Length: 180
Image (cartoon, rainbow, N blue to C red; front, side, top):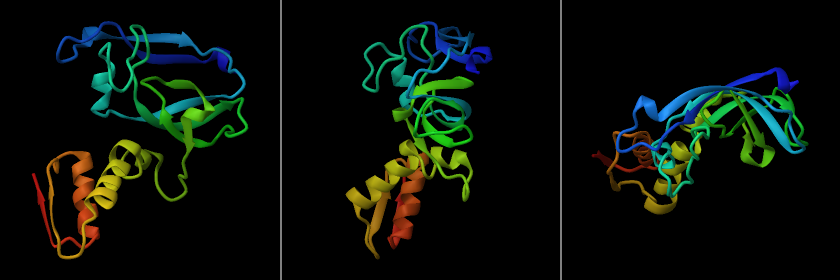
């Protein structure tokens, strides 16, 4: 079971002062503890290194703060290897806040099942993901509401969300799309 598994994780060693330095982090190895009821053990396969992660390294972060010695926050996708949950079974593909580590031991409520029969799991961190695809979609469709013939200006077009927003505007029929 999980007690014989070794988890390699990136821990926060010190709070960065400005740009994070390598010395602000350390690689640690821990034995994976047995699961409790309602928990799932996920083999982490791909992580999304999003801008919000930097803010979690600060003590008073809007997105929640990583404690000193805690695993660095990251959204990811992976495969369930062990489960004490009615929602997930070994072999299920999932996404969620898995952290920068090889195995994530998490409550099942923190995970979403993903369908990898049509697209690779990593797609759920980009086009189908919360911080990129869903953000662009909600901003364009529910807020911007571009119509055929419109001119749309995307102020962050060079980034992942802005790039998707421009594509969504185009698919919505916008005639001119200006990316900044």
